[in-house]
Image 1 (cartoon, rainbow, N blue to C red):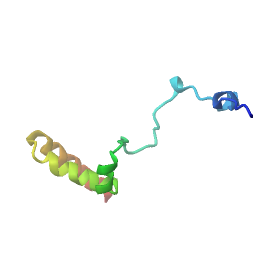
Image 2 (cartoon, rainbow, N blue to C red):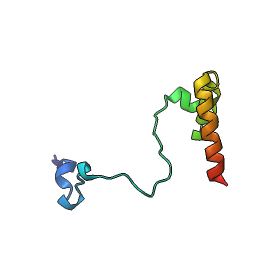
Image 3 (tube, rainbow, N blue to C red):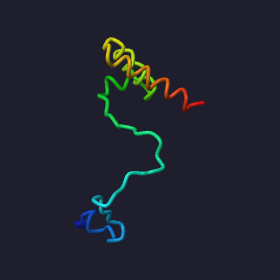
Length: 81
């Protein structure tokens, strides 16, 4: 039987990354959040655009959220031009 070496032991020291020294990417424009959908929900929403559209429709029922959505949509429209 072949013994396996743990992945951490195989990795060379120059590939070990010290996350405590990590900095935000100054060149990134958008801040994206990854969300994991349950499989039954993922079957309905095939891409992030459809998820965002549905969530914005739900948020229109919340008065203070509606104002935030409209403001961010206007800003997005300006940057897309």
